[in-house]
Length: 130
Image 1 (tube, rainbow, N blue to C red):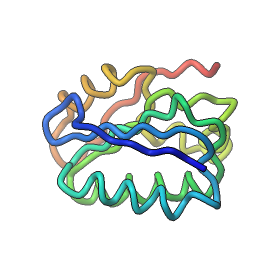
Image 2: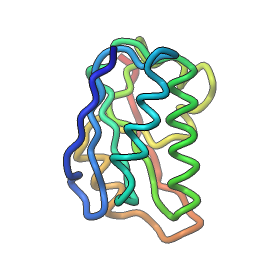
Image 3: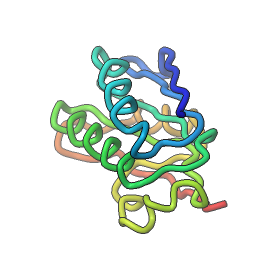
Image 4: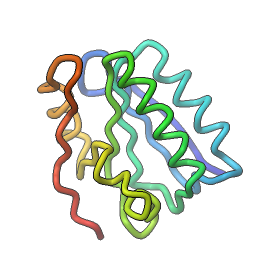
């Protein structure tokens, strides 16, 4: 079972969500509901995946759904520490090239702070697969 927690993010209007354990078909509904509730009053979601042990396509679908929803509202979603061995689905699906991936929360916060206005995207840092 996944453990999820959140705290105010390092950037104004942001929330930092930390996930631990497996994000899969068994936890995807809870994950989606949690992200929706935690991000209700925030334009920017930063999701720390460093303690995720497995992430499948259903969790990826949740992340993509949240990303699209935030993007439509001039918000953004950033993923931190998406390790290739536990989050392989990002690379297999090609979403690693579309989602904002960072090595640290500080890098994600810096990118959000420098975020361009509506209609443009936040550039991803180069993530080194582990």
